[in-house]
Length: 451
Image (tube, rainbow, N blue to C red; front, side, top):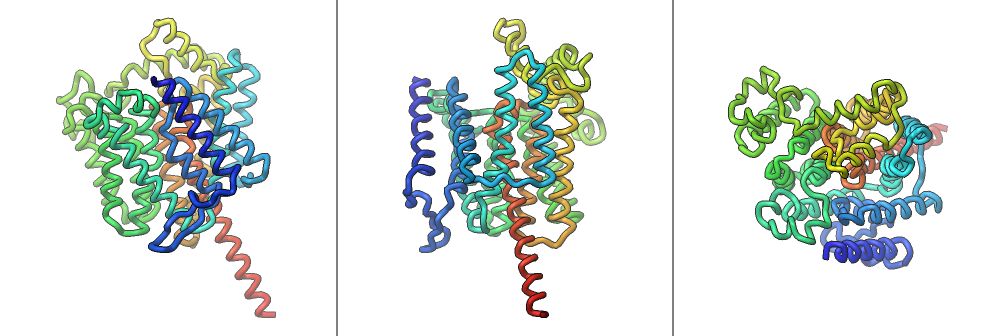
């Protein structure tokens, strides 16, 4: 039954994308922006919205079919020049990082696994270009935000924490099996948690505050620690970028709420502290080291990380042991029932073991380039609100996902969450270029009028 459903959903996805790019039908792309005001979404923007809204669709054992479909569509878009491959320092830095991954495949003993990792690291860059090519104005952004927000809230009701509590038969049944749930879904919510925040800033409608809380509730009900930490980081980055020093009370409030959830939600408390649940106080968290890796219950992660690093990092510190090898090794042990978990649960440990210090350093340099670019345009220079909003979206979402990568397998599920901040980064870079072009045109007009 589950496989049949997966096949049917995959066929629907194929037909939907085929209708989008290979027919002249426009009606389904016509959106009512305001009352009796209609706006035609571009094919690329519709594709971006469709991608984000179907991100939790995992298709179970047929998940590779979805990756193959999206990769084929993106390669076709790139080769047919329907997506513009722009270059900017942050993109160049990511390309350098990706080229190092390509080099790491040359000495990998598991070429198939190495190729799959290349695909999963290549998709975010592709979606950066797609996001850049998709957005043209504020209407595109608002429609994207509203549709993604609505779909995410619906997902929470059925495959999120609310679904686990209220609709367990759907959550655990054949339908629920088609979606990425628990940690991958919490990572998805972390990636798009900035969406209701931006919508509230744009519209001042309080319903978007409740949408944000609804997403937080989903993660809390399932006691996903990484998701809670990622969401808090998204919120902190967002208000710091927008309000700067005035954001300090908001940061303190977010910290207080985070600590309160850890202390007073029994399931979350037990997940954090294991056998010591109920004995940890607020003072232990704020003034002590109760949340250190040594004191928290890591569900066996530390042992797994030590195993991987001992076998593949030591002796190969600079370049690692080859892309895909650590994941393949752990999965092989799990298949032989020699270990309880076949996942590394740390993309940085995996990257360090497989590509060495150079690989991790190049990824960190990419993060630094993004931070510099966003802070420069959002905080220092006088750009318009579209640049500021998309910049906040990009950096906040990326901060949340970068955090999740330390505790989850975000790259292995890159279509579920990793691509989102790259889409937002594409939005941001396009808005910067549009505003720069307008400034240059205004300057030319002033010169001509002066002459």
